[in-house]
Each structure stands twice: as C-alpha cells, then as structure tokens.
Length: 108
Image (tube, rainbow, N blue to C red; front, side, top):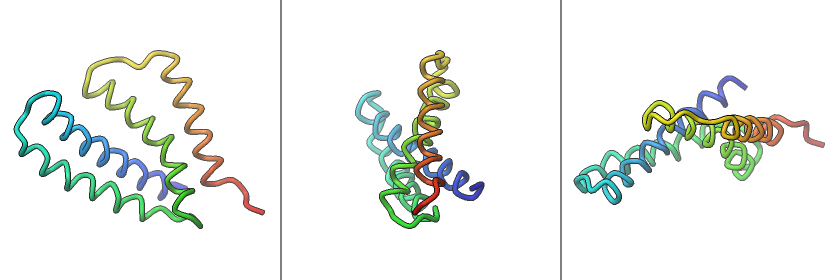
C-alpha cells in the first residue's frame, strides 16, 4: 500500500507540473520553451502510473483520480497560495476513501 501511494504521489506531481508548464505557456504567456519540461514531466507521470500494482489498468487509473485531487489541492495551497476550504477538504477525503476502496477492496 505504501509503495502504491508513493507512485501515485510521484505521478500526481509529474502530471500537475507538466500540465502547469502548458498552462504557463498558454495562459500566463510564458515562453513556448516551458513545454519541453512539461512533456518530460507528463511522460514521467505516465511511467509512474505503470509502477502501481493492480490487476487492471482501468482500476489503477480510477484510483489515481483521488490522489490527483489531493495533489491538486496541495498545489492550490503551496504554489498558488490559496487555502483549501472545508468543502475542498471534505471532497478530497471522500475521493481518497473511494480510491482506497477501488484499489485495495477485496475482489471476489
């Protein structure tokens, strides 16, 4: 479980970083060179997701959704300087519980 969590967190940071690079280029009018580390970061994201152990790719991707939401709120707080409110925190808690059920729930 700890190994999957680490891979998911790495994937989330890589995905958010890669997407932010394109956001910076297209929305913040930064240099198109921002896309180069963005592409590398998005490749790292895809690679990290393949490291999670599960019986189906779709299950890995579905469970990742909650981790991505958690990491996005961390980005909101640490990078953008906006504190998540109680609805943000309640929502991410629900998502993480759902992700855990998807990934670690007993299978028949």
